[in-house]
Amino acid sequence: MPPVDKVSIASLIDVEGWKNVCGEVAEKDFLFVVEVFSKWCGPSEAIITTLKRISMDLTNRKIKFVQIEATSEIPDLAKFEKASRPCFLFYKNGEHLDIVEGINAPLIEKFVNDFIPEGVIETDDVGEGDDDDDD
Image (tube, rainbow, N blue to C red; front, side, top):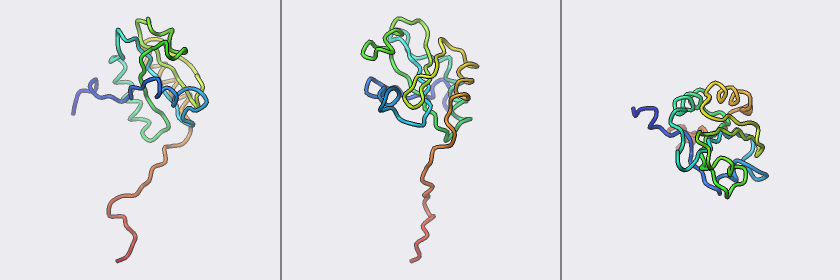
């Protein structure tokens, strides 16, 4: 098993991917935990263990972890371009809910628990060998 800090649980998104997180056309009924980082310092590796644990604890829940580089192309993120520490933004139904500046694992976990939508992700439970057709 690879070390936890080498496991990526967050998807790296770009300006196009941001549309799924924020605004009127954002993906509905999901909590997005967005790590915004500066290009010169990159995403944080210090929080990976916490995010992985949260992700495992909330398997099949309506939460997505994403990372995005701060850019002036997205006005809401421009202010983070020169930040020396990551910021974690929380969005649900395209609406900004809160922010955690820096690595504050207890507060990130509190906001996840406060904001996560009810219910689980529906999946098709079609498995191999479960065919009910009679020959």
